[in-house]
Amino acid sequence: MSDPRWFPEWTFFSLWEVGADYLLHCGSEGRLRLENHIEEIYIQDDEMAENLMRICIEQELDDSKACIVNTMTYRYLRDGEWSAALSWALRGGRGAALDTTVNDLLTTVVHLLFVGLVVLIQCGGKKKPEGGTVSGAAPPAAAAGDKKEGEGEKKEE
Image (cartoon, rainbow, N blue to C red; front, side, top):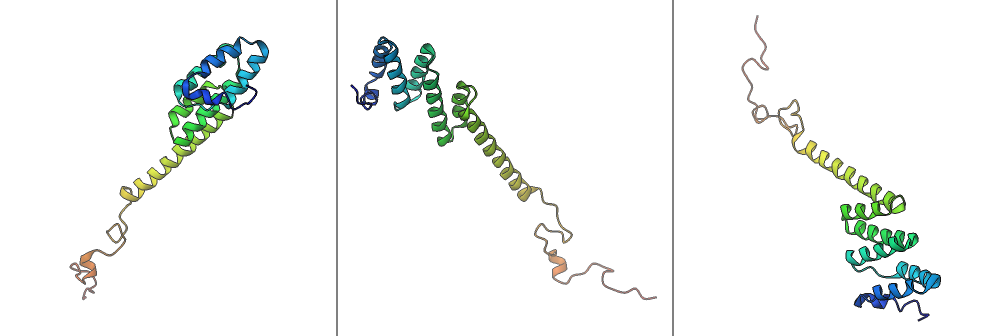
């Protein structure tokens, strides 16, 4: 049982909860081992993360709680799921995960808004230049040599 790799293998069978209860009944040494195992365990899904968070809150394992929050936050950031990442980051209170999440979220939103504005300006916001067309080319009638009455002719006096 001294091998630190024994605990993550339990995650496939949900026996980690039984192991956590056992370690909590082993006094301060068990509590320290539980904290170390929580920080090294692979978190499979939200349900497992929620259960780990519950244990950390009940037992006041603040470092392990921060580790879970960071793991889930960065997982959702990597997947581009901004609302889930922000939700997890807020659970940790203040910290690097929250700062990173808000920074990434704002950077992405500002970039998307900028791109959207550029597209709007290019598609529909252009004013027609003096030539009469959006491209700036001369109108077809003027290009063909057709002139309106009185244009290009000198008046005789």
